[in-house]
Amino acid sequence: MIEVKSLQKAFGKVTALDGLTFSAPEGQITGLLGPNGAGKTTCLRTIYGLLKADSGEALIDGVDANKDPLAVRRKIGIFPDKFGLYERLTAREQISYFATLHGMEGEAGDAAVAEVLSRLDMNAIADRRATGFSQGQRMKVALAQAIVHRPKHLILDEPSRGLDVMSTRILRDLLRELRDQGTSILFSSHVMQEVAALCDQVVVVAAGKVAAQGTPTELCEQTGESALEEAFVKIIGTDEGIAA
Amino acid sequence: MKSPITIVFRKELKDALRDKRSVMAAMSYAFFGPLLMAVAFYVLISQLTDDSDVKIDIEGAAHAPAFVEHLERNGVVQRDEAWPAGQQPIVLAIAEGWDESIATAQPAKVTLTADFSSQKQRTDIRRVESAVENYSKQLSYIRLQMRGIDPRITQGVDLVKHDTATKGSKAAILMGSVLIFILLSVFFSGMNVAIDISAGERERNSLELLLSQPLTTHQLVWGKSLAASAFAMFGGLLSAILIPIIFKFLPLHEIGMSVSLAWPMILLIIVLLVPLALLATALQLFVSFRAKSFKEAQTYISLLLMAPMLIVFGVEFAKVKNQVLYYLPLTGQHQALLDIIKGEPLQWVAMGISALTTFVVSILLLKLISRMLSSEKVVFGL
Image 1: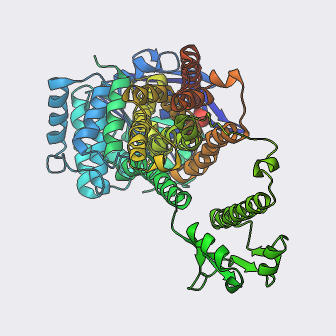
Image 2: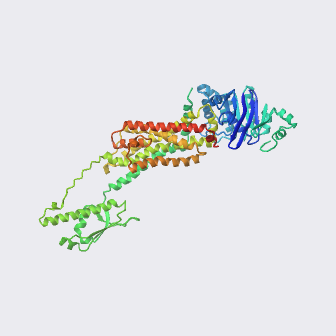
């Protein structure tokens, strides 16, 4: 369970989060939908403790990342806003690095890495160095890094950007599978279709606040629109920064 | 469970070893630095010990055949070929009235024209001068004897020169500059790795994810700095071993020097470099974790490298002598190395203290870096 309670965060004079409150329960995919600059990335970074909230708290299974960041980070898998690979390491070595950082060593670690490699259909590139990987292949490595230790919580920051259809499908299938295994998944996006296709619950964020919350259908009903996109525009009052 | 420090250390080492640029940087400084020095010394020695004839222009040789013969016996001969471009000719002109001057026991006039400031021709000029002085001395002895006077009367003081400089202490002057190479090798060799694992990590956008893993920034910084220090140490090791070997091949004995470093001393030098390698890395990480990109970090670090160079060269050339130098980081290792080379008694306590202060400064710096990486301002450049 990921809980965000009245988070406040300002960078200088700019207010990034303004009392943001929502929760992402187990066995559900929660989409954080909002235009660019709405505070999505700031919110996620606060959850895994890279940013400190001015007030309010972000809890993973009741633990605050600002108080015990290591305990929180052991429970989560992260697919960050920017993911860079170590160009001189092979895919297997990169994933294994993150597995060992999560305490998975020896045979158990190797087995976990091998499992995630075949789950993501990466055996062909497993022992190639990351230099020359395509965007889709890089995404798979980053995704594998995030889930290799089988976290109970998965946080993804705009996971589908720059991906082709095949890679997007792999990503979606994986997220659904993990959800069915009881993982709480929180991911941010500004792509409407993706949110509509994947999410059990949508949290619409605008200007650091929750503008609306509910299933895609509920959001449409609330606004009296038939399409999620129209509902969204109505909720945030502008269509700025939104991709269809 | 393996410590996160070990995990990070092993990963960074593997990564760095695959980076040809880093390996080359570590190797090349440690390797080419001493080699360059060796070549320079080789040229210097062969110039100093040159015993081939000095070829100069002798004008009016016909006036004084005996004098010219004397010069020839002393290796100063008439030049046949042209002077190379950019070199001032050395001209010895014998005046016309030579015979008359000799006959009347007057000073015979000989003019030496040359560029006396020229480094290259200094030994040549010196040899011409001493050949002429010798002849002059012989002449005056003969003149005194002919008048029935003991020539020793002209010698008021008999100065006996007794050179107490050992071969080792002469070599120390030369080795002083070579030492700087050994000391700086730890600063140069790990530099590329240090930049790559800090500013490079940020540039390739992997820093955020790494910082979100279940390890403290303290563990992360230690793992990284140990990996970079290993590289720095590798360079130090290489140059500490190579320099004595290279000096074995130089004909130093020809200029009255001997450099012999026993293996225990080389081992001691290597041990002394260990805390310095950690300090070098800590300094470099401190600077380049603040940089946004590899290029930016490189700029900062090349400025940073001036500091140890200035300190070591400053102490070396200003001949600063102060016991405090033995206790401080960098200068402490420098002084200890100087003592080792000169064969002077070693100050073990001072060595221990400088190693300790070096470690303490490094640890404090690493602590500071860990704190820096916990700050969102530094991590995200807010």
